[in-house]
Length: 300
Image 1 (tube, rainbow, N blue to C red):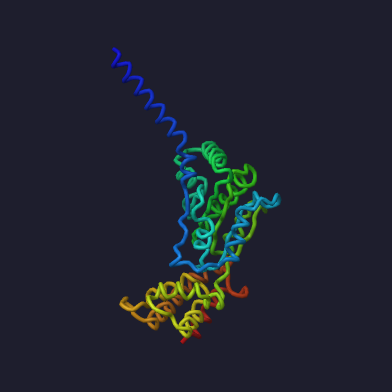
Image 2: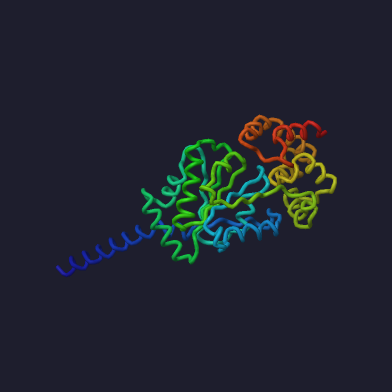
């Protein structure tokens, strides 16, 4: 009988522990979430931009601390890398990929393993208490997102959980101005634009060090100029060219990699035209598709 009682006590203890872990799992998921900072081998520091974004995220100014941040910029300019550089290592940072098929609230519930908003609220309340600050949610909006319900859902979530409940700091990352314009949070928004790298930034010692790592050897000034003439300061495209143009790869030369990139951009013109109709970002405010077609056509 004593043995049976011991076994029952042990079973009850284990069940209590299981229930405790089940209750804590949602907020511990938040606490354990982090973004991985970019390696020094693949990141070109942009100190001024980094400092501004950090201030925007952690600002305690009464007028803006509960606003969400709309982070916009052209494709391949390094928005995600910049965010990971600024927030890498912080606990309580959730990344949520947004597409046409999954409303933001549903995505959050799925990540936390809960079924209703009240459980989401409890998780964020506890996580905020444990962290001593608001948890951070990064909504990365795919360029193809056009579903009005998803866009409105993002706006409502930012307003509800960020401004009204004051439980999270919301960052929304977009590559198309039309999508970003629809995510207003009823005006509770701070805009943060990430520009392309300038020609001067590409000449920095940090940039040239990273270029050499990507390409496997020194990249000459004339080659940097040729690449910049084609893709501008879109660092993602620059990396593609340098990696594909390494010795020993299928292309094996910068000439072939640059020619390949030119073809890729030409094939993508129709996609860029679609983006344009949503309000694409372009140098000097020009029509992105027209500008891109002109630049590619004039490139030898």
